[in-house]
Amino acid sequence: MREVKFNSKNLLLGVQHLFAMFGATVLVPAITGLNPAVALITAGIGTIIFHLCTKGQVPVFVGSSFAFIAGVQIVMQGGIICAGLVYVVLSILVRLLGPDRILKLFPPVVTGPVIVVIGLTLAPNALGNASQNWIVAIITLATVIVVSIFAKGYFKLVPILLGIVVGYAAAIGYDLIAHPEVALVSFSPILEADLISPFWKIGEFFTLPKFDLSAILTLAPIALVTFMEHVGDITTNGAVVGKNFLKDPGLHRTVLGDGLATIAAGLLGGPANTTYGENTGVLAVTKVYNPFVLELAAGFAILLGLFGKFGATLQTIPVPVMGGVSILLFGMIASIGIRTLAESNLDFSHSRNLIIVALILVVGLGLSAGVSIGGFQISGLFLAVVLGAVANQLFPAEV
Image (cartoon, rainbow, N blue to C red):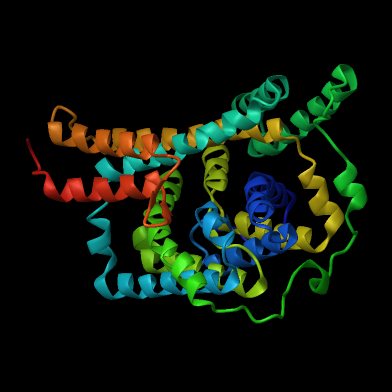
């Protein structure tokens, strides 16, 4: 249910979603050489655009897309805008052909294991971050689990936020006691950041992008790959919330929202946007599905991009703290996939169902690093979705 109220509960939930998306959103521009502040602003703007396109029904946050990293390192904004335009064209095609033709390709036997792949593909990132300091990561994870199970009232709604706060304090304590060569917490980003970063300082905001043919040919086709991932992400989000967002408000609207968000990012100098599994994980943990909370998080992201000190404060969150939180978030996504399979009452005595699930899991997880085809980097998730959809159409209903 949508509740538009600026109360303490919704504000805290919005901050929690902000913490969940922050690390990945600023990491992409850090890798590609774009401005992290611009990425935050365009993520916030993109999320608001997405919610407008989806009639405020889908509790999604969009942020910097990792799928475009390789391409963005070669070319820049003109290609990103064209990638967004490809999404708009795909949205029109879905609208004309009808969503049912698309949805028939993705029954539970396909979507269930795809959701599992999404969660488990992210798992190595969580464990890699946590491994930088297992003590801090375990303290963070334990806090989230204890609060989720035993807390009451407001505290039960913000286990991720409380986990980050406790983990942050634990990291400071570790630095004071252990005196590591490289401190887990560094306050230098806060000291070096400007208090306010106005538009004319954070990016090339009013500079027209260059529409180079090589940029278009490099980045625009990636949208065809991420379209299939988008279907998986929206399916996952709907499974968490308990609604079919591919039907209502419709796949054409969610694709359009992603496309327009990416176009806006390209025009303003930010990276391409995509839906975030981290925030879907927060939904699964808190069981608060109000889209307005995500819109508040979008507003906070824009403010953080403008006010340097606040954004720099989030940058000081230790990596193992986010790793500890991510272990649960990504695990919850995988669990939703298992639940999808369980609730669909699939008969696994049929070889057909076993084979489809097996193909999706092995290809999606085995090729999680992606494969390079013709110079383009294609994700294992994309290949798994395509393979699962094709197998579901080709294999007879009973074997």
